[in-house]
Length: 419
Image (cartoon, rainbow, N blue to C red; front, side, top):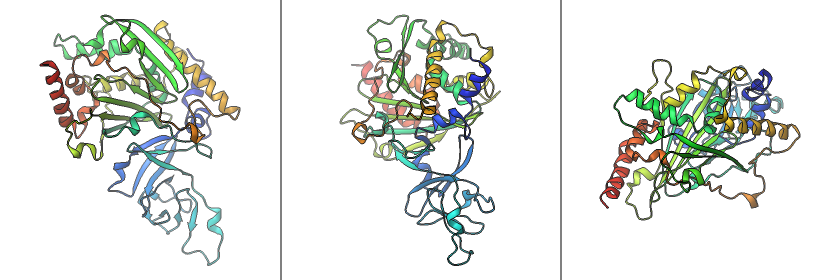
């Protein structure tokens, strides 16, 4: 249980808040880069700020406040230039840092433009995602997770806005037991087919290990040996707001990252990033490898949750707690020790930045800018029902390449079955 003051501290993320300040110290994903292929601007709301992601005439990206500082017209309708973006209302032009660099109707020689600056943030691309850094400069190096740089890979990006605070979503990532009930017994109740899923096997043990980049959670379920990957390896939550999920097959390397970026105190941009790395020599259609396949996932809502879908089961559990759950009224048990470990880490890292230090996981020295190879279970129990069965219960059902993936993995499963 948290005090009211602690709950406020950990959940408020707007400009000037301690938690907003902490989360802004990390590069955060904005969207799939491919979303900007056929457009010049995209409205974005992050950490309580209304922003515009734009592409200039040279193909470079910027992220600046949506409202033009002149008369507050929207730069979402701006005119791209080689140097930045021009407001459609009176033509004031801003570069990618938000600095006003031209005011067409001001007197020649005027320095008025030098005094005008909108909030602007650097943008970089990695793994087919566009990331923004909204913290104090100089910006740290981007954390290059292994799944972002894996090549060749089939990449998918699903996204939605979930109507609740970011923290109740992230706390789910250090709560292994929920899967036994929400994705197991509840799934079986919803389907009413009598089918039993591996998710519903009882947890015999859970454990949490803090590592330099976050927290690793491990589980041992009924029917598993203690040398299984779920118990000896597990999978991590990358501090502060990414969950990495393990894979099911040793021949294909699969990376799944779930990234939770606060839009504001009561809404969260949720991104599912998946990269499938085929075995060497696999015959994969070129069109699957050449681009990032992005898609929207319905946010659900009362009466609209697809409760046979694992991801909507999670969203239901998060959103029905309320926009910001009241942690003063909770009663934690022994299975919730992952939550308390994570909350302590957040409070500790807040004290670091208050003292002028970098929080955990921040890299500034180029000599230490290595790819972060994550230890992930390669034989995850939850996949034991088969790829296609698990795939159809996930948000992947909305992917534009869903049929292609089921066909690829279905052939592999059939081959394994008849081997």
